[in-house]
Length: 355
Image 1 (cartoon, helix red, strand yellow):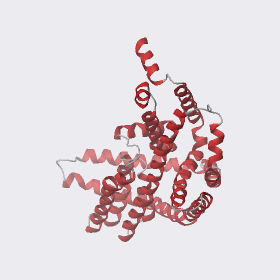
Image 2: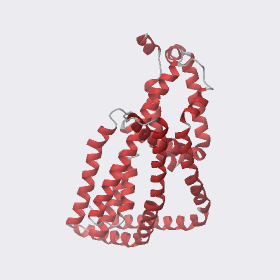
Image 3: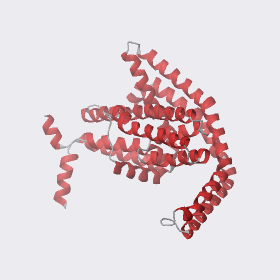
């Protein structure tokens, strides 16, 4: 055992910079684990800054000066932020309230359908199974209602925190874009002066994460926008809310698409029933999901880190267990970072090949 550990140490930690990198990673993980909830707005600002830095790089490659490119990307960000805050957010909020008001009627309609299943399909369903399922649904809805009532007043501090985040996040994005070089230089001052290994790993890590963040941003806009257009064309209720959910579901591959399908199907069935309109809506939604997985994702992430589905599930469970909803939201970006670091981690074999 000692010999195995010695070989592993010589292979992966023989370089001084490898040890420095390991200390940095352990320190970063410890700080994130201890203050993850507090630092969540910072992580959001970093991801948004990556997105807008891609816009600035695009304009700079078209011949615009760096300062002008950053200024335009910053103005675009604030313009989009104001449009979402005063345009999309109120619309989605109104549709969410309407959905909450109509949820009991939808549940009652679903219960009536369940009651008829033993008569129509006696081979697959029994009356006892339907009664048990109905009791479970009613119990869950009762507990959800009680939770909403209980947390109504206690959510006021959370709403105040959200208002603070709405101010802090745009400010942090602005300074991340404006003072990017100064911030990187300040952080680099704590590292060794000669650090070719760390610079190489940082370059690869920065490229991988930038590709992922910008690719996901584009995917959210395309899938969310396409879903909203489809739902609006078929006059589906809560089109903006469902389109937003479908757009953000791409953050968690496989799992997100599976979960968001449930509200889409429930709303469409409650509005149309088993009619051609319901089939058209579901068919169009299925086409969007197929095109996303087979066309858009390979096109956007051809140069990004590809994660195995098992790794995605483990990342969601791990980071979601640590930080709840924030952990689920950042699970795939963090897993992408971990994968990029492991892929770029130096070893004696790679160093021998490079020399």
